[in-house]
Length: 366
Image (cartoon, rainbow, N blue to C red; front, side):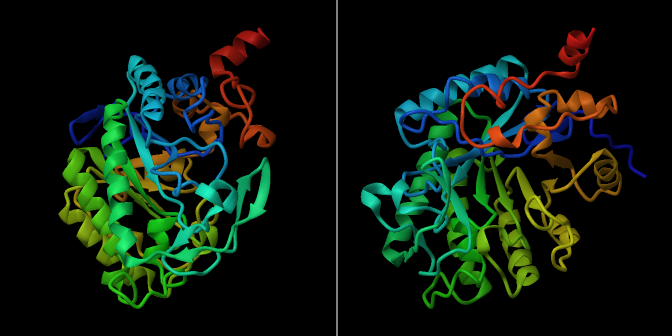
């Protein structure tokens, strides 16, 4: 058995991570005017900088890419400057942080789109899901199918966003190709019924994701580019009739880019791991660089997967919300604090930066 633990350092490309724990992206809907990270964001992320790697909340690459109220962007100078306060705070604590680049596609609402336009999608199929808009959850709006002539513009939006992320001080970016958002919508035939070069075969459905990846790698380098996929997750109403074939092909192509990591949601996002038959080991073996495993992990499962060489890093999501010192709690086998679900989306400092560490809790009780 390999002697791997969650708590040993790990080399990710040119970065040395303090441990093998990753903070997964967590949408918190707290951006301010202009979709700039709030004044509390730097505190929030720096409080959690003991994770080996932080991956930011999903961040839209354009207004068209926004699907929920008060989520941050990375397409204006003010947004770049807002994010720079976050990266500086994380780096001051010795942490490492990537920015997740996001286009939601059809998972949006007309009230979030410029001039009330319809959201865009590979095909004009409305998703069976809701978005957070106007301070409540509402059904998504009916989308329109993207014209093929529009796709290079979206690729360029990802390219520009990657450049902006590096300008803001991020150590790298994660392309969001998961959870039923735009790139995942193109990948899966339940949401993509196009008959042009971006629909039909597994190769065609992967075309946009691979074009985006090529653009980002060309712009900032493969050693600063990761990607997230969710082969069998039904998140946001997507489905696939051929997930193994589709994602074996996708990962073969991604491996050729020499990306720094592949981040895989194993099962249903935030739900059961066994939602559908799928050989995640196939993806692990096809990708030569770092494999980040995500979904439903605890310390024991994480240790098992690391020791069996089924993953290199383990991502934890919601436990980080109520436990800014999650790494220390896991290491000391301490109990985990619950988070307040009423403050999960939107609001200010409450339920965001006021969760105490284990040491602070003990001091208060003493």
